[in-house]
Amino acid sequence: MMLEIEKINVYYGAIHALTDISYNVKEGEIVALIGANGAGKSTSLKTLSGILHPMNGSIRFLEEEISTKAAEDIVSKGIIHVPEGRKIFAPLTVMENLEMGAYLQNDKDQIACDIRGVFERFPRLKERQNQLGGTLSGGEQQMLAIARGLMARPKLMLLDEPSMGLAPVLVEQIFEIIQEINKQGTSILLVEQNAKMALSIANRAYVLETGSIVLEGDAKEVMENSSVIQAYLGG
Amino acid sequence: MERKNQNPIVNWIVKSKILGILFFVIIGAFAVYKLGTALFDNPSLFLQQVVNGLQLGFVYALIALGYTMIYGIIQLINFAHGDIFMVGAFASFYSISRYNVHLWFQNLFPSVPVMLAQIIGTVTVILVSMVVCALLAYTIERIAYKPLRTAPRISALITAIGISFFLEYFGALNFVFSPNYITYQRPFAVKSWFVGPSGFGSIESGIAPPAHSIIFSNIFLIIVFASLLLLLVLQYIVKKTKIGKAMRAVAYDKPTARLMGINSDAIISVTFALGAALAGAAGVLYAIAFPQVFFSMGITPGMKAFVAAVVGGIGSIPGAFIGALIMGQAETLSAAYISTPMRDAIAFSLLIVVLLIRPKGIMGETSSEKV
Image 1: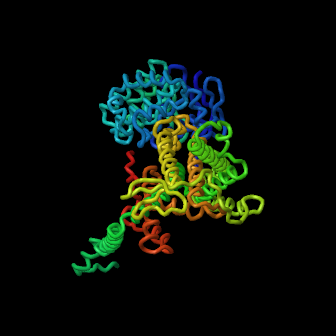
Image 2 (image 1 turned 90 degrees about the vertical axis):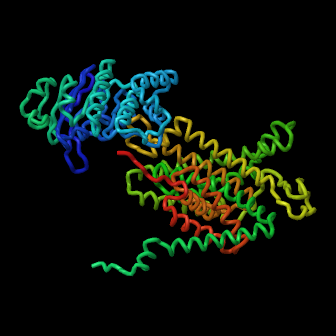
Image 3 (image 1 turned 90 degrees about the horizontal axis):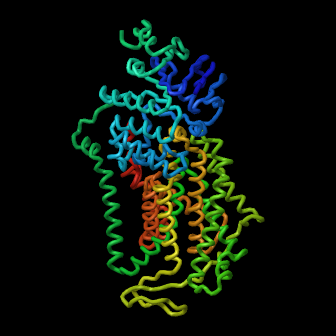
């Protein structure tokens, strides 16, 4: 088991955001977390990446307890969190954004090689490498956010709403890229409001509702479940 | 209920902000007239003032950079910054008069020409002060500011004022720096040159320089060169190095920087140390220019540098530099042509004028965040 979350409770101040949540991600999988606004999807990712810490329960990544570790240490274990809203460093160039993704990598040749690889996958970013991050379009920013995440050479990538605010064509493109990244060996935990899209590429899925998991299973099963269809897939 | 004034003339006066504009135009015209006549009446005196203002401006620039960098990264106006500048001046005072740091190189390599040895000696003194100040600021940041990182900004601001008083009055203790005004021994002998219509030459003691020439000294040269060099080094660090890029990333978005594995606390500490190192260098240069050190010497230059940073656009490094140069000129020119006792008032009024016209400062970023 790559990532194993057991019975965590997370509070946002006085708000009990996640209640006794357990889920896991196996090596090489794409796992989708779906649910409505405020169900706790982003909170679970923030807890994994160390921005928030659970009150109790355990988070084990590659057999190591990480629930109390600081965000910067978790990155070095091999988990990268591509945050909601892309969070590009606007005053830094595209190149510098990528370099920040590789902040914990020390091998210069390897970084240069990774940048070449990222540019091959995202030719647009290569064209714009000296432009400021803030001047990119929404789709380009999302690509940059994913590319920046890849620069950390993650074993597990947490993607928070990668389709948010993008045109349908771009959404498809982003999801193809996610699948490609997965094929090359990175496990993916995907948080999405666009449940249909997420389930179409995921191996397994968990459905969150007000801080608890109400349904889990193979993506196909979840997709066929009538309550999910009603709630998230628009009939 | 709001009563609308229907008088079209009054309306126009209010809407077009004509009174405010007129006010600035008149002040501007007055300043241009004053400076213009000064330039025509006695161009060499005018240029002399500009040179003096430049010297002052460069020192302010080094202090202002620290203010602007620290503000840029944690939105804290570090009121203790001026006192770190004071500690820098004292560090150099002790390293010169107690430990002869400025002579170390000369003693190690006696065969090196005196001129070069003096330059290297001065640089050594500056570096010592920079290191002392960097360590001091690092310690202050860890003890006083870091625990307040998530507290409201006003708490950190009040702490900064507290640190400022602490440094001043701890320094004023008899066994620390003492409450006295102490004469500062420069690490090199002052040498002056003149340049003007009668050519260029060095000024020997006891002989008056030819009329209508501008006088400058090796103090001026060392201040200008050291400041420019430090500015370039800083620009290089911020723009090209990994740590500088991380500084900009942390300044922009701390949580996301942490998601990249950047230890934002460490980066903030480095920023403090870097800003303080510049203030330390400024302290040495200021003491060289005005050879006297005392425990409260940091207050006024610190304030003026802060104003310079705000005028330039707080958070912007080139802005701080430009603001400081303007501040230096405003101070010396108003002292020379308007009123010496009023110079600080005039320099500070400049802040108000600039902020009225450009609330974010000269180089202040007009925020354009993309969501």
